[in-house]
Amino acid sequence: MYLKKICLMLCILFISASIFTIHNASASGSFEDISSKHEAYEEINYLVNLGVIKGYTEKGKTYFKPNNNVTRGQVAKMVVVASGNKPLVVNKSSFTDVPVGSELSGYVERAVQLGYFKTNTKGQFLPNKPLTRDEMSYVLTKAFKLDTSEYENIDSPFVDVDSTHDYVQYVNAIYYNGITKGSGQNYNPDSQVTRAQFALFVARAKSEKYRLELPVKGVAVPDTSQVIGLVSSTTDGLNIRKSKDSSSNANIVGTVNKGGKLSVYAVEGDWLKVSSEDTYAYIYKKYAQFLDADGNALGDVQKQVTTTQSINIYVKPTSSSKVISTVDSKVKLPVYKTVSGYYLTEVNGLPGYIVANSTEDVKVEQPSTPDPKPTPTPDPITPPVTGDLLGRATVDNLNIRTEANSTSTVVSKLKKGDYVQVNSINGYWAQVTSNGQTGYVHKSYLKLLNQNGDALKDRIIIIDPGHGGKDPGTVVGSNSEKAITLKVSTLVKQKLEAAGAKVLMTRTGDTYPSLQDRVDFTNANYGEIFVSVHVNSAANTSAQGTETYYAISTGDMHQEDVDLATFVNNQIVNNLKMKNRGVREQQYYVIRNMNIPSILVELGFLSNSEDRAKMTDDQYIELFAESVYKGILEYYSKQ
Image (cartoon, rainbow, N blue to C red):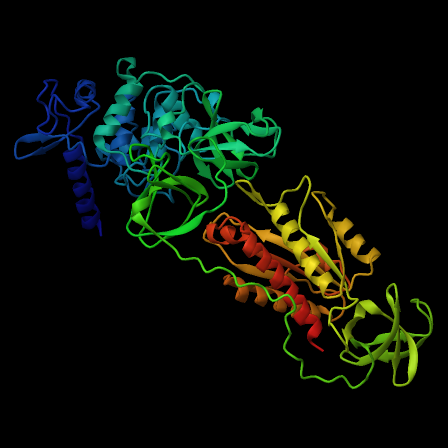
């Protein structure tokens, strides 16, 4: 065992010597692989003369190997020497992978003692691990005593290092001190650093002579050639913030009113990185709409196309403009406009231009003309009682009382599924006859079934267009959820009324009833079913389809919710060829606080171009309404 330790130490000493042997080469030809034209030529020779740079000797020649990744061990030695410090001699190593007595040991121990490295990984220093660019920012800031105090709470000039990044203040420090300028908009914090790159950075940190032109903090940072789009505010007083944090007002640097335009440099989750007052800032994406290259609204989708090859998405309708992204072959895209041989389209929520002749038109199936009075499939169940209007109990132990109130004597009870003859209805109370006995039942727990004529005749149905007024719901471009839901709901109301139903809407214009207002409205009007109409949205623009929700409420009446949700959901999916996301249970306020069958339907995703094309097309709007109507009719046709 002792012999093995001796051998291991000798190996490490040999490796360290090969890496760190100083070649006193102040002449310009010190390294075979560094010519006088190399970008780091001057900086490397400057560091050689300081005793900072080391090379490799192979067959009598000296090489710098500029493209090799610089390791943590090499960095420790370089910054200790460059900062004017000496190795620290210790009797016991702080790290299991850095043996005492090796040349590397003293430099690592000193670098760690001086706080040049941020972490100690499970008792190891990891000397042979390549240094990353975020670690580099920390090492240089600490070794050369750069002041970070003014950079702690501001965003960086790079799109891939935001204000919450662990190293943001150190990245800012080396940027604003002229040590690095990144790569375009990116700093690439997780990338490794080559030996030549690190030599440049150390020389700049050590000497003002090699510094880059110093940027002024917060001024002239945005590079307009990197703009990926233009947006306008959809509301007055939209806050412009210096970081992606809406929990405080401390980071607000300005506001923009409705219609105000801002250049966009990146989409970061729910935020847009914009330029304002010659610096980067953020606005909340929900309250902005993207515009075309001329600053106009995108408008409606004109058609769909499929790419015939891999193509670029450009900021402007010219191939000389910035490429935003690329799209593979056989991808379906919406087309908003045609400009000089280019189509204005949208990919992942971001508008851009594609070459028109690299696509082919998609033949869109037009919706069929709705049947004004569809005939539902007859229900095979024959109720055991007769009468023009029957009621089926939707819960167990439903009381029949002597009077139309909840305190009168209970004369009988109904089981779930029992049928009664309904003689009359007054408010929420139905006078019924069961087994020859007449009494009163709260109609919320009866499914009322017409036996003659239209299944919907005299049924009281509440339609709830989601959002409204100050609450637009989800917004994409000029399209808002509140407008779509009102349009669909209004058509549903017309169709139901034509079939004999009494229909009330929680809002008939651009107003904002609260969630409790919608519940109270339903109760005040003795609603018998409740249908809330909504439009979906997701950060992932590929999410699409229809889904319908119910809530489990008192007793076991939720089976009625499931029936109603299933009928409506299936009608939309089948009639509009929507992706079926299914019927789901969710405790949304407006449906969990109802004592009647209640559902919330999400027609489709406004964030998805294919769904949005349907929800903004009048023919499809008609078909959405027809499908909701048919689903309700199917529900009431089931005995």
